[in-house]
Image 1 (tube, helix red, strand yellow):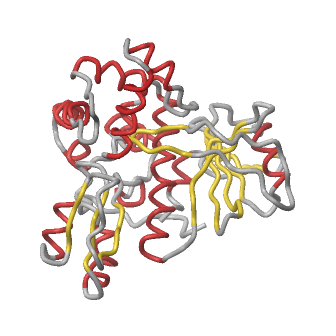
Image 2 (tube, rainbow, N blue to C red):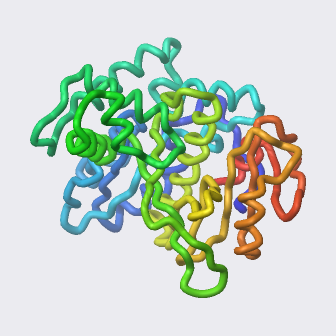
Image 3 (cartoon, rainbow, N blue to C red):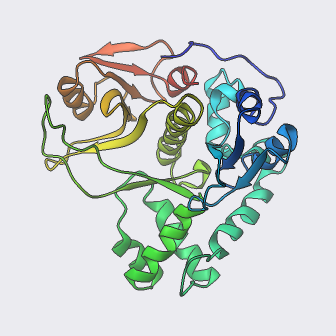
Length: 321
């Protein structure tokens, strides 16, 4: 794991930690900043020089010839210098988009961003109206952290599955949310009956999730995604973020693959005094991988239970770059 404690910034600069390595890359090639709206891409571009940096919020936008893609994410615990559980609770409610994190009346900024996400129909042959889009989005937020069921989302919003799938694909393409694939069964070593289909989804704005547990799971997912994608974009490391689920209904929220080998297993669990049995099972399958169980009721000091490290989420997130 990276250093245990972040550097505290009383008034954190938008993406300060990303600006410095990007300044070095700008001298070598054109940089294309990609990510959701509201994460500070345009601010970074202005600071680094507009001629050397382009921005896009669409995941499927063609890359400028000779450009290097760098993905930008919501603000993290380390970037904000958070040190107390109360700070983390505030971050859960506000989300990590700089505009709503810093604004005095942050709730006013959310509908404007959400309205755009629901109306943008680029690439859809039959776009849905705003009311139907709001219903589809509400269904997505009700199922954060669970395998995505297009049939259930379509039924809740009263549209057919094809239109619901096209709408969901567009939300993914414009960085309203991201998807995680299940961990495939390894070709050697540990084996299990892995699911081959069934993606989970998380919003970039984790405050949109309906329950505190779903918000926490989405926040952890965003932090892990930032770690993985920044490692790939800035250091050319081969990391991926997936989740584990097998045919026996065992499930672990997050698995980090490094060169296709599980190196980190993470479970968000409300229980703090017992090791999650699914996480303990997967940890036995991959004994070289670190296994973390995160609970808001856990102490800041990590506790070892049956090969699993149980800790408060803030303690874990402070160690992620």
